Image 1 (cartoon, rainbow, N blue to C red):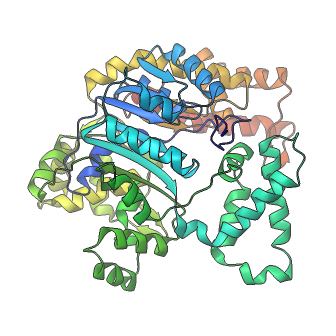
Image 2 (cartoon, one colour):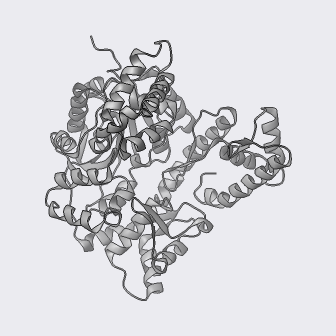
Image 3 (cartoon, rainbow, N blue to C red):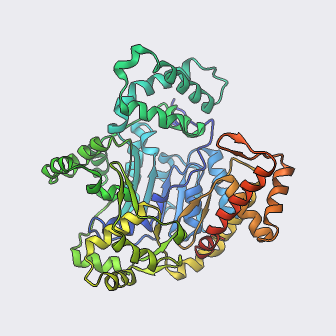
Amino acid sequence: MQEWNQGYVTDINYTNGYYGTLNPLRIKLCFLAQNLLPPTISTACELGFGQGITLNFNSATRNALWYGTDFNPSQATFAKNLSKISQAPLTILNDSFEELLEREDLPSFDFIALHGIYSWVSPKVREQILSFIQKKLNVGGVVLISYNTQAGWASVAPLRDLLYAYSTLLTPSGKSSPKRAREGLEFINELMCLPSTEAIKNPQSISMLQTLSKMDDTYLAHELLNEVQNAFNFSQISNDLGSARLEFASYANFSDHLCNIQLSEQERNILSKVSHSKIIYEMLKDLMFATSFRSDYWVKGAIKLNTWQSLKELLKLRVVMIVPFSKVDYTLNTRRGALNLNQDFYSPILKALKDNQPVLVEQIKEALEQSLKREVHYHELLESLIALSSKDYIKLAQDEETIELALPHTQALNSYILEQALESSNFIHHLISPVSAEAFALNRFEMLFLSTYLKVGEEKWLECVKDWLSKRNEKISKNGRELEGAEIEEELQSQIQRIKEWIPTFKALKII
């Protein structure tokens, strides 16, 4: 009899990660990038939510009425406890996908999110997921699916299989999954140093092993030690989701929308020859990019827009800058290296957003046209917003009513996270903005500086931080070297100054 975990690693909880692609607000810009009408998202469900960080953040921002399930009881408990802090409306379940499918007390959903789980479950469970989507997704609804792709994993598959076998057969069974995964990876790296493995070495496999080596041990275990490890091509996903009456809508990562500027002329020419077939186009593009992980939106009935209609919808959106204006630059990192953005075009956009307050895209267009003294066309306006989004300079902003509705929930959650970060290095490393409905990553010491600032203000800030470090015998290191004496105070002053630059932005975004 197959166990309840369906071959999924359950002796450890999943990482405390946050994934912005699951924010329904993001769908609006991504759909318009493909000339599709963005749907209204009122109800949403996350399947396999892990620790439930993203789920709780989404519910706290009130961007939809959220439901979620995860079949790991301890993860479901953690997520439930977190939801008690925010007091946002949220239904958390500990159902398997089979049990979820049989429930009669669930609404239909406008948005269903699957982050990673599709690659880590058996064909039987994938069928249950597809049946749930077919049964519970509203017409016009959207599915976010993230999955491992063959193009990036194919060259490393033999090594991954060996790592799995080594970790499960040769490491002591009493060891935790993270330790077994790390030992297995160290063995593979040792193996790759042998001259006899030259034949299987290639830039892709070396790059993948380097990436895996830098991963958190917990994430590594979930990535490598599941009994089921699937990497799909776009055609397979298209067939699977097509059986649930879905069609590809848009990329969920903003950088994927900037395909043309990341390809050579020869690559663009080859892609243009197959552009009439979406499946071949995406499979070929994945090969060119050696894509190892995709995040896409699929829709149950798309509404195509013409350029004028798309522009009309785009101008309704609100955008907010999420970095201090002093931090902006005009370079865009791509697979072809750093590209220089046209400063004459981008500078008026960034200046219109410099106060970190939500601004209508219509107002941005007006400011841009006034500066350039010409009409700004839809595609150049859209591309600029996508480029700035891919740089993590801007996000879409919720309407004022939703922001006010979300504020008590996000404040409660952020206050709790800041307090917990003082006591544990293994807690949540994000804070949520009710304005953008997305979270911001901070390390533990950034959390410490922010928390102490909120407690004592600027005047006693440094003394409070030093006192906290002293009581816990915490050491300060820089570039791998432990700091001593005056170096410590100098580094703390530097960090305080850096955080001070961000405080007005955090306040504008209502994070603090």
